[in-house]
Each structure stands twice: as C-alpha cells, then as structure tokens.
Length: 361
Image 1 (cartoon, rainbow, N blue to C red):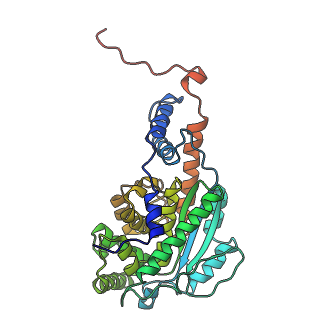
Image 2 (image 1 turned 120 degrees about the horizontal axis):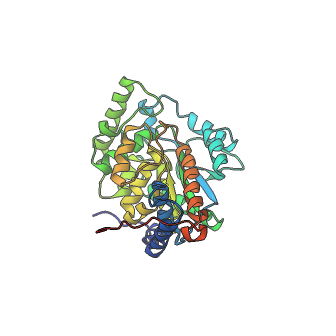
Image 3 (image 1 turned 180 degrees about the horizontal axis):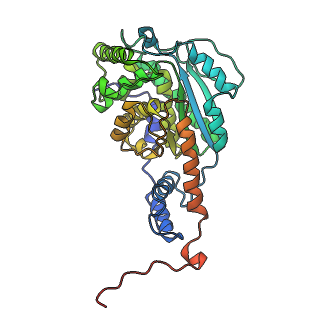
C-alpha cells in the first residue's frame, strides 16, 4: 500500500477520460472516404484518428501550440555524472528566455509558444518571460538519500497541472514537453530502471557526452541510489520523489493536466519519457493522450517507449532535450491533421472509388 495522492492531483487524474470512441469512428470513416488508397498515408492517418479521439472532434484543429520547458537542478551532479557543470542549467534557461537556443528556433518553425518554467534551478533567476515556480533549490543527492520529499514531488506535479490549466484557458490545444537540468539523464535512467524492471546498465546512456569510464561510474551511482532509496515500483510518486527530478515532476503534471483538458501531449526525448512513465503509473488512461515525438540516442528511451506502447514519429539521432524533437514532431502532426481536414472525399472530388474484387466470373 502507499499513501493517497493529495486531493487536487487526485481530482485531475479522475478528470482524465477515455478517448471519444464516436469521434474516433467518425474520423476513421472519413479517412476511408478521402481521395487516396486506404492506409496510404500510414501513421498520419492514425495520428489524425487518435487526435480526433483526444479532442472529441471528427476534424480536429490544434493550431494553438505550446512547448513547456521545465528547468531544475540535480544534487546527484555532485557525484560527477555529467560532462557539464551544474552552472549550465541557469545559463541555458536564460538562453531560452533570450531566444537563442535550438528550441526557440524549432518552435518558431511550427508556430509554437515556448513556456520556460523555473521549478527547481539552484540559482536565483529573474527575467520577465520566466515563470518562477521554484519548489526547491534543486534536488538532494539521490545517491545519498531521497532526491526530494513526497510533498515536494506532489508540489512539482501540481505546478505542471496549474500550467496546463493556464494554457488551456489561453486556448492552447496541443502541448509538448521540454526540459533543462544538468544531471537529469541520471534521474531519468533511475526512474526508467525502476518502472520498466530494467537494470541501470540497460537504460543508462552517455547524456551530455561522457566517456566509457564516466558511463560506468554513472551506472554505479544509479545502482547506489536505487539500493539506498528502494523506490516502490508500484507507487509512481515514491519513484519520482526518491530518484527523480523537480522538472520531471513538473512534466508529469503537464501530462496529467493536458490529458484532463483533452490535449494531445507530444513527448520529447528520454527525460520527458521518464515523466510519462510516472504519469502513466499514476493514471494509465493518460497514455492514450501521448504522442512520442522521436527516439533519442539515449539507450533507455527505446525501453521506456516500448513499456508505454508508443512508436516514435522521428529517428534523427537527437539527444539535446529542450523539447526539440517534440517541436519537429508537431510539424508532422500539423500535416496529418491538415490532410485529414482538407483532402476531398471521393464523392466531393468526383473520383471513382476502388472497385471491389469480383469472384466466380
């Protein structure tokens, strides 16, 4: 048994409904009438049908898009598990806010708004464009004890839910998950190991570009963290609190809140995927609202996507994070929905449909 979730989080989870089967059936029927051989647009057809079910619209429109970039620091960086120092986290947050990062460029291409959130950066940050929602001054070193308290983990989730609520009120209809936090591939690897039943060696990669000796050390640190904290695989919040990160918790909230508001949720890479594992543990229904933007080079990403039953849209050898892969995937989703809405049916275009095969002639 584990402790119940705080009421506001439990209420959001209760609000996540199954996909709209009538909208799915109507969208599937429309796909069968469009001027193309059935199935010839492959996964674009499946995306349109899924998003119809998410939005309860036969011909969905999700033009208003946002990419939420959650930022937080990790105490486990004291163990020397990253090729970059922790000071890079606040430096990159300011880069996002000034429009100088990859996510800014790619979000601009797909017309998505970038929302930058300080949920746990271990430095004071001020900028008019920053959402300051600091739950703690970074996490504690999970190799020596829990990364955060259960209350802090719940507060991080609540921050993400509140941001999803705010975006929904602003008319956002599709949200993507991005992050920044030196050390967060270590947290994501630990979460993935626990929630998929894998060994740390199977799901731990090179993160920012560490060498073989550093990778072996990183795996050993994660093994120590799991032995020290013994997270309960059946309790997603316990896993998040003991070996997760504040920005990962924030993304859990964005996923749950977005699903409650019937938004498609486009996952970025490994870190966002680990948040999805936690969200799915808290609400299995939330999985149906997820779209895997891409597969990263982090070895654990494939493991967690398989566990979630998700097939990535892109494979571009990305490993940056920030929401970059999700931003690119938004362009594909836009294309899938444009084709679904704008193509003529056979009847509208006056095009002959496929002839049924004739037998016994």
